[in-house]
Amino acid sequence: MASWVGSAPRSDPRWPWKSLGGAKRPLVMIVKRTEPAEQAYWDTVVVPRLNGDVEVLDQPTHDVKVDVVGRARAMLFPIDWPEPFGLVMTEAMAYGTPVIARPLGAVPEVVTHGKTGYLCSTVEQIVDAVEMTEALRPEDCRSQVEERFSTGTMVAGYERVYEAAVGELLDPLQGRGRHAARVRGPGDGTMHDSARQAVRPGGRTHRAANEKGPRWAAP
Image (cartoon, rainbow, N blue to C red; front, side):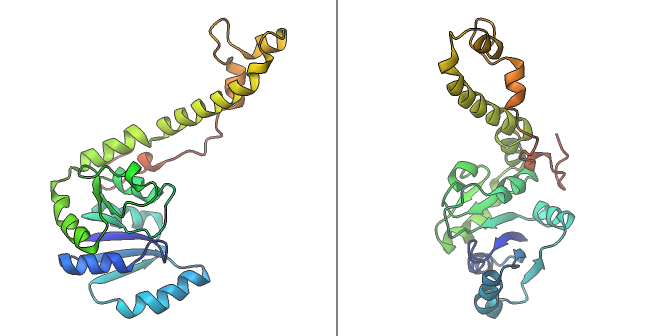
């Protein structure tokens, strides 16, 4: 079984069922169609092509999504636009499920081809990739999310960016007396704890690696 999560037409649902038809695998589609354009596309383009091998879940609960994606052979992500990140990819990999996606936008930066999934440009490549997922290790998918997209990693990245930005703002204050001394650390140019506290993110951080999935518990 493979899963598809998305909203049409940005993530074109015609790709996965063509691919799974060729691979002779069942498909579970987790869809969002709350916007008028999404519903219209679904009714006119998707519905006429559905068959008995496709199960459609319309915005199911979080627990259902975790169960479906966690048990899937692969998560299909055939986007039709330059996705700036793609949270659903990291969520799938956090459960140990590899991702098969089109190499658009940030996808090549998130999915490691041949290790945590496959980058495919044609339906034929997706068909082959579905079968090749047997060669991928769930542990590699999970570990990549923990190393690159966990809460701690994301917070540390935000802090580095914020500290660099604040540092640029404070540079003109260097040598101007007590105000600069209060903000900068003693002698090494690092930020004082009070300044660091001021730019610390407010806790709304990436949580994909902390989700509990069927294969993995939260770290």
